[in-house]
Amino acid sequence: MILRRERLATILTAFLLAALVQAQDLPNGVGKDLVMKVCTVCHELTRITSKKRTKDEWSDTVDKMAGRGAKASDEEFDAIVNYLAKYFGPNQPPEKSAREIRRPAIRGDLP
Image (cartoon, rainbow, N blue to C red; front, side, top):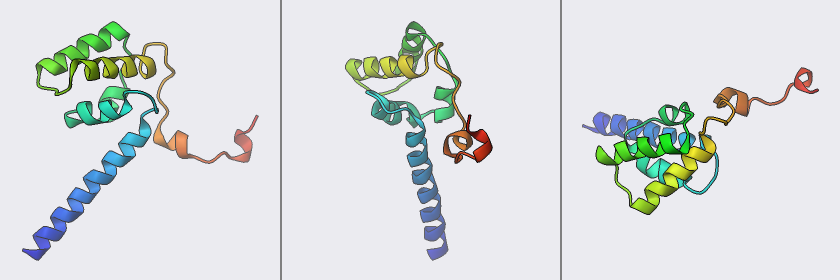
């Protein structure tokens, strides 16, 4: 029984750490906390961040998710759409991998 508790504690810790790392991968801005709270209940961040959609497309997507049970107020859904359109719109540069973001500059990388 103790072994089961330790295993459960290890699994829960891993999930919590993964959630913290994911939150750090989103750009800071109004709506980030709502995306984390509402969208990641069902989706991994890569499913969200890999999409490049217009504001209307994000609105349609968020409406579909609300119809499937996503829980938020209308104002919160609007903030989510605005955040996603701003940071994951069609004109945004491709997302950098965690390796590219965290890799220290190497002398040959400098211009």
